[in-house]
Length: 488
Image 1 (cartoon, rainbow, N blue to C red):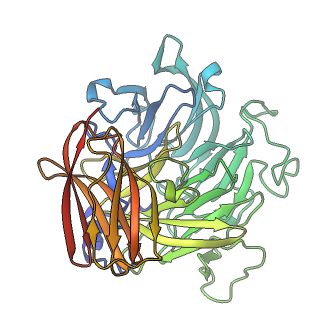
Image 2 (cartoon, rainbow, N blue to C red):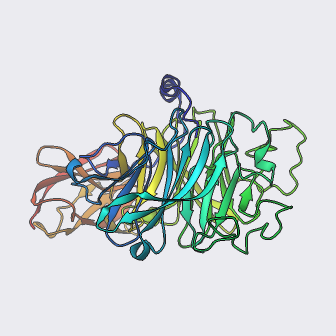
C-alpha cells in the first residue's frame, strides 16, 4: 500500500475529493466491537475451529484474539502472539502483515505469519504453534521459518498469506519497492518479487522447508522460472482472497501514479507490471508490448482523490443478503467502498456502496463468512455493514392508489417479526426507518426506489430489545409516523 504518504496529504485529499458516484443509501457502516480499539490494524481472520473467535493483526507486531461478540470488552481481548521484537516497522509498509491458520488448525495447532525483519530487510514466512495449554496464547518459541526473501526497499512488501481451496499456501509479494520497479523484478521470473507464490507447507523438497506443488507453472523447470511462482507481473498485491463458492482469486494490485486495479489471478498469469499500469503502457510510456499480458477486470484512476486499492472479499455473509456474490473492495485514501459482480469473464454490476470517512487498510471475514472493514482513522476500529432487517417485500402495482399511506404494523405488539403495509403514489425513493423512544434511529426497514402501488414488508426486529418504538415513512414529501411495541 501507499502508507508512506503523509497524513496531512491524505487528509487534504479526502477533503477536496468530489464524489460524483451515487452510493447506496440503505447500506451503512456500524462499529462491530464498540468497546475495542486497535493500533494499526491490518488484517482480521478466524481460526476455522468453530470457536467463533476473532484474530486481529496489528502492524506493530501483535496478534490479538477476542470473542466474536459485539459486547466484548477490552479485558476479554488477549495478545495471542507478540512479534514486536522481531519485526522491522520503521517505515509505513513494514511490520507484521499477514496471518493464516492451517486448514487443520483444530488438530495440529499450526498458523502462519508474514512479517518484515530488519538488518538486512527481508520478508519472513513462518509457522508457529498454539500453546497446548491455552487456546488464546501462541507458543512464541515455536517459530519455524519456511521462507526468507530479501527486500531491496522499505515499501511494496505485499503481505497476504492465505490457504486456497486446494490446500496450498498463497503468498503475496510486492515488486520490492522504490518507484516504477527500477530492477524490473515483477517481470523477472528468477525473482520472487512482484509475484503471487504458491507452496505446499505439508511436505518438504530438498533444501526447502516446504514443497513445490506439481501443478505450479514452473515446477521442475527452474531455468524457466522460480518454482514457487504462481502468477507474476504484479506491483503490490496488498490484499487478495479466494471466493469459497466460485474458487476465483481476486487481487487488489496497488498502482503507481495513475491507476488502481482488480485482477483475477490464474496459474502462470502475467499481469503486466511494469510494462503496464492498469490498461495503459507504463514502461515504455507508449507502444509497449502487451502480448501475453492479462488485463485487469477493473481499473479506477486517481482523479477523485483515490490513491491505493484495498482488496477485499466476495460477500458470503448474512447481514446484507442483497450483496451475496459481489466482490467488495475499497480505496485507502478516500474511504470509498465499492462492489462489483463478475461472471463468465464480464463485470455485470459495478457501483459505489459507501463513501466513508475512513482510511481503509483491508477487510476480513469471520467463521460465518461475515465481512468486516478495517480502518486506521483514529481511533482505529473494525466496522461491518448494518443489518438488512427487511426480510421480504411484496407489492401490487395493478391498482394505482389515490394517495400515500402508511398502515399500522401487525401484529402489534410483536416478538421479532411484524408486517408493515404502505402505499406509493408516485415512483421514487421511499424510506421507512425505526426510532427508539429517545428518537435515536435504530433500524432501516426500507430505502428503495419503488413504482406506484400497494406494498407490504416483513420486518425482523430480532436485534432490538423490548420497548416502544416509532417507524416513519418518507416519500416524495409525504411523512407519517406510527407506533410499534416489541415484547420479548
